[in-house]
Image 1 (cartoon, one colour):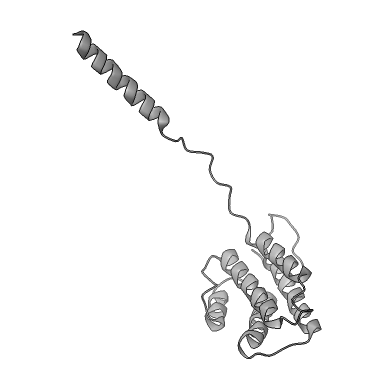
Image 2 (tube, rainbow, N blue to C red; image 1 turned 90 degrees about the vertical axis):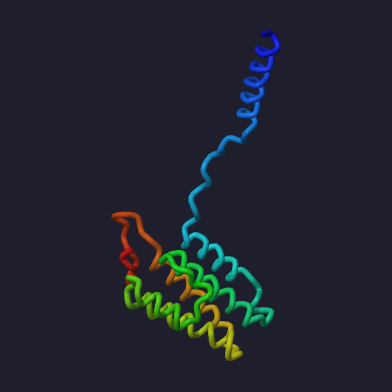
Length: 157
């Protein structure tokens, strides 16, 4: 009888120790960072880079295009990085962008495509203007807290 009680006791002790050994779930992960926050950081890093001064126009425009594509995909909820420009424009046309922001995005994507695919080398000032345009698009299309004032031409998101 003592041996049986010892086996039952050791079994229960073993199960209790095993249950305590399992990792407990940690705190939930933080919420994903807002698309506009990521885009602003990447655009600021691009502005601070010396790519244009070094003559790395193609790399500058590829990074600019990828930042804008990633932003609109995350902002409007679709996979944008693997889409051709025409497909991306079609997808954006289904979203509720105001005309000025939509037009600025299309122009920006077309201009960066010229550098990426047609090997066009724009003036440094033109490349900086495209960067400014990308920053303006992010600001106009970023979600606003309820009651916040929209910038001129801003989206109603």
